[in-house]
Image 1: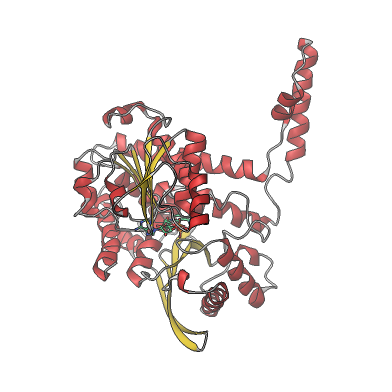
Image 2: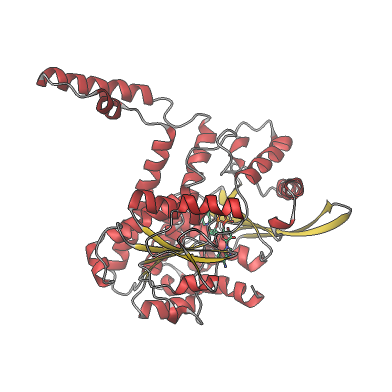
Length: 473
Ligand code: NAD
């Protein structure tokens, strides 16, 4: 991607901010403070790779200190540059506000292509990057808490935790210095699937409204709706899988690095992932057609398009050819501000990134809370609830003289495990956040689209935090 195209990601975020800011009634000085990136740490460090020394370029940006700690993922990609990390950190601030997660936004980036390094070399780079963050006080459970993003996962988070513990092992809350850790290493059940699951809940909410669906020429509900997914990584895979298994959505097309495939009667996502693991490619999946070019996925006539790879995918040059009725921005910034103008005129519903992919940070917040409480969710109440429900069922059995079967009884009396509570908390978060955004969109005529409504919601919440500090009028 050229510098100007990634540069335009930050520009797009800025334009979207300005478009919404005039509907907030906030003081212009306050808006300027909310918009600005508070701290940008740019680093270069050497790592010995084989017999060579590589100078690694990396960043950590803390967009807003209005709430601490700051929070946001770490991206490993050859395309990382300062503007991109700043745009991603900025989106994190608004994302946290939208889903009522009490953090400021941040993001990290390491300019490497992970495919070009061995596991041992990646570990070396990750540990050195973490050491740089520790040295400059850019990481800590009350300071700045990284998480996975494009090109990283629970493995990298484990290395970050271990490095942090090496320096700060005496800190009682040290485990909360990073989220997205393996479950066995202070992580939480349900974090890996969280962003995709959140995307599913968000799409389900949007599609449940009969009036909004009618405007798109669609019937309410998810069952039978067609979906195309760009990027079968963490977010794309779980969005596809959960939409298919729990929403009865038909995933007709998937694109990856190596190409794209189409299958009219639906692609089984689990089988496709197994096929890719075995053959190294999604292409030649049994029953599916290989598409000529991977980017054609963006132009298919589907109900729901899920860009789940990188930013700047739908631009001025291809927006007119997009035929999807709904675009769910699972990736950050996949639609540029120019493209959005075209798509909105065409009547496309864009469910914005800062809402739809907020499931990851929401469950990261639960993980951080678990780390600070030093106890897994459900430990205190599970058996108590189980006993209460059993008493209720047995009382009803006595009163009616009828008994329920053993299987039903087990189902009715079960106390919640950690995974049940995490999913429940995520579902509640995505439903209530959508309802707040939709209300702004529908109630205030001047707020024309869901992204502007999401921005207005975020800016008002952040504005009120600053006002409470007494800094602004
Ligand atoms: P990932 O590295 O797990 O997966 C991304 C996938 O996209 C990779 O498999 C890659 O090969 C593929 N890809 C890249 N360019 C492509 C292209 N042009 N066409 C088709 N496929 C392509 O990353 P991820 O964690 O799933 O993140 C994806 C997006 O979601 C990013 O924008 C990220 O910022 C955003 N996001 C991630 C999380 C999270 O929890 N991981 C949370 C919120 C937002």
